[in-house]
Length: 539
Image (cartoon, rainbow, N blue to C red; front, side, top):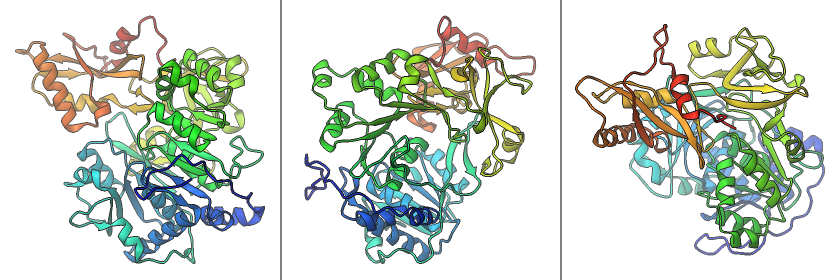
């Protein structure tokens, strides 16, 4: 694939590369040190590793730049275990930073760039960041952040007071592999019902091996993975970046998902793999018939999808269009259980997300912690592993609440059939899933209740054809206030000032009284049921 002087990718197809030299022992050794990109740089150095509108990288170039960043950050005082925060879009420098952290032993935290400034500041402080790599367009989001532990501040695509230029900083460093590589790990943040994000820690650092012949992914020389979603999210970070790069495949980065452009890239670059969410399927299916008819998706061999339930109608339409190449998984930031379903299995059991295999410790439990009988809904639960246990960073009370027992749950409700296949029937009352993103209503309630008119707030998810669920604010008012469009606009504006855009309610409804339990808790489920009557939420 060629690149113009302006960094734009041309229509030239990805060149073929020779197959890797088989050396299993060497691969395992380098994987244990986070050095698989270095391995591929030796085996297929001229092959593309990153394809992007902002410029391409071969494996040799990606490896050298990652090494330069390791040397730069170590020179600033970072060492194995040091936390590194990233606030970048889908750009090559994001991947360079991740690869550098993987081999320097750093604990890296990609931050959702949709978040409001105070949310970003909280994560920067909470993760104890010693280095920050930020894209210039997001500098305003950290303007007021208190970051006393930072030893290195690097800016991509611009300059700012207190920040060094990322690319210029790399130029002064050696591109040689570090003499003492150490496997790093990620700490991703997930929101909780209390409204504050929590860092998810897993003991140890997982060793990622190439997913080549004999695996589901079956990466081969010359394969291309299309990154459609935000790189900061757990699933794209794993499925679209870490796994393909570890397997010697190229990553093609879309800065924003556009369905027509995705089809163009699939045909132009002969894309073989991708990871998507149901909203992307809906947008692809909504394209004009002539665009879909002309699309060449014959190069695709595997499309993984998850993050939110997909309606049977949408999934069946995608299988009819692209063929039985879809693999649906069920997981979360906290739980990475081996649960998934092929297209062939799904066609036999539409709506299932996969079989619960006893050896992986996932099950459906009732309120007493006992397994539910087939067909009986309960909490989808995960067994804590003997090693690699999960916990929340700096959240002892929440850890005792969620992770202290043999099993834990992230709030999903479902049932299994007679053969052990899981069907999700909804989420716990506290969680909204919109476009594949978890949104926790307490955070929105906190924002709405700052307005003097609001006595109580009970944010819920309501049915949405495009997003699965939309955020709906439901409030009761203090004496002296009446519902009006002016008040609705004021409440939405207040929420927009402190929340990420995707968390802001699209509409506000008014109730005289919001139901309260005898224990004094808002009965969110009762409010939500009004909007979901006659519909199976989440399916």
